[in-house]
Image (cartoon, rainbow, N blue to C red; front, side, top):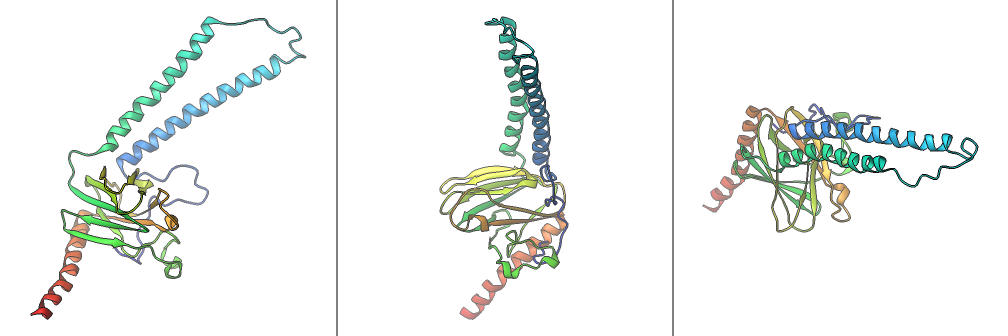
Length: 260
């Protein structure tokens, strides 16, 4: 269950001098990671090819090495090649790109739903299946304890708790301006739009604590809207649900008793 103020494994937290993406913690993030790697190879090959052409032009066709310039005006074969080859490259890129977009769109086998509401400048969460809701408020710098593994600008007073190995439908909206709920390790980044519901999904593979931030400029405190998700086992998630319901029923029971 959520343990605000206590340490948990952070399998995807960025490391010093890290050059690649965060370690994927969901099938969607893994697909994005693989696609990024594929694109990196394609871009590297194209860059080296263009560099080779430039070097050939510099050293083979300079005035000293080639005092009599060529009067060639066109080459049909070359023109066909440099038209067809980019089309082939774009098709090779487009196929996995569209596959990823469709995969990330939504799940038809959702096991639970969480609604994420953006506010200036905090997040609200609703678990309609469990009838739980709460606000998640950023914690100020003077409350951050680095000895406990806490991080400045990334901690909140109440963590999101989600079970691993579960298809989770994510619904997004906002109460004021545009926001964007983003967890890089999950491969999730979607706009929270006032008056509209956006949807995606996630299935978390690894238990641990994951961090994110608002990724849509939303006002003066945009950079102070962190997200903390504790991914736990299904058993611990059910224990957390029970604890939250008991905590919510306590004040209501006390209020009813005082009214009587």
